[in-house]
Length: 154
Image (cartoon, rainbow, N blue to C red; front, side):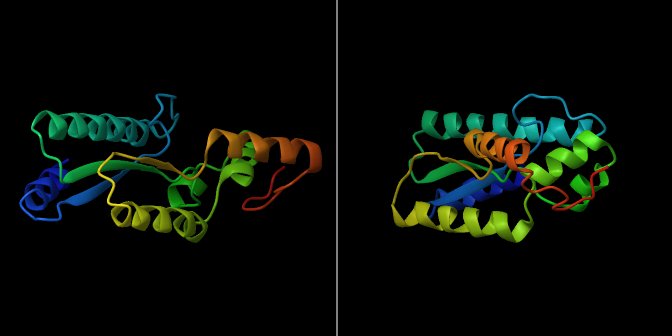
């Protein structure tokens, strides 16, 4: 929140303005995050912060600064892997998670594209879309895809 404030204050005085990208995560959609309550609560608040800042900028007629949201999906971080303790968790990590480099290979070009389009509309860039998640779940059930990809399943 403080970083956004400072970035906005700096960017709106620049002729080119700027773009801020906030990153959401598990819990950002309002679903519970057992064993990771604080993490989920902060990610839910990121979405609200982004929307509120977008509204405040529009209300104050700041047209050269835009706040965007990034959703990397399930990334194989230490925090995620520390939660791979149940059969269900292992199942979904193997199906839905990706390594940071795979996620970055998708997100970074999409981020870089926004200023080149000279678009000043807020965007929500999602790596793991609902369609991609359902497709992976189907592939797993139908063909056994991604079994034991990151963690051994019992």
